[in-house]
Length: 334
View 1: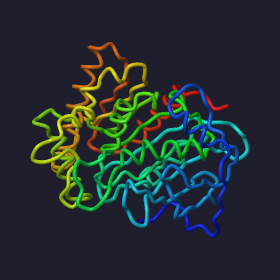
View 2: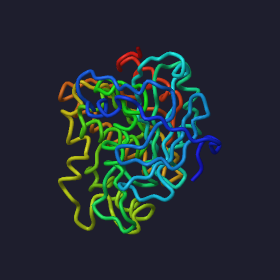
View 3: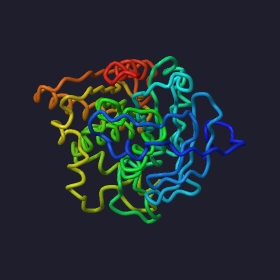
View 4: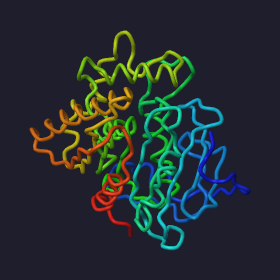
């Protein structure tokens, strides 16, 4: 798997002072991480850096090994820094941005789509990690290829590692989570399941209802993960589901967990009728998001929703609008 920057010619390591204390404050209070240098990140929180490129002024690349995800040579992470990160000395809010499913989707997806241009001039760090070809931002019920615990990697390892190594606000109002397709589901799931971590959540063509239509999304998660990532294993269990896990991950069953968050939803209304994949995906996304919105309405929880022409695609205009809202909602850089 390639990265978005050329292979580094040097390796520099700097342990950030105060990083541990920042990580211990994950999701609590107003503690600010104290990685004061714009230099290289270090190992920690179960992550071992095996490849890096910090030569680009904004996009820093890492490949890390972790016992939670047995990928060889490792898991990719792109960290997109604000334009003034190296000169300002300021602390910044962070967006965790998750890619969709498929063999052509990975931590570089949004760099290909234009995230550098979308965020130019914005006081925001954007973290884009691998999530598996069909990892579903979950720890699978069964794997035949070793550990693929994407949820543990993202929440218990990557978040505190970022806070320890970059100048971030390690607090609720300092983080947002967003994603496309499978990544939009991951964003909705993490925002509810780990309530104190994210003040803003966005799902761009991300499914919000797992059990509707006979559990079609659960079945698709099981089939796709078994075929692409787990060698016949499943995210939710088959033929019998792990019902508690489905309920814990299902946005429509976690409505109260979206209270006091910024919620941003996008779904397409006109998928390509001759493309069964596009039609099946976005039809289910639209129906599930409408179900979710009705429940939010019933609970008196505000949200911003967009139904847009087209199918299961990344919409630059919607991501740009989302980024504006994220910066407005999160704690300001300072």
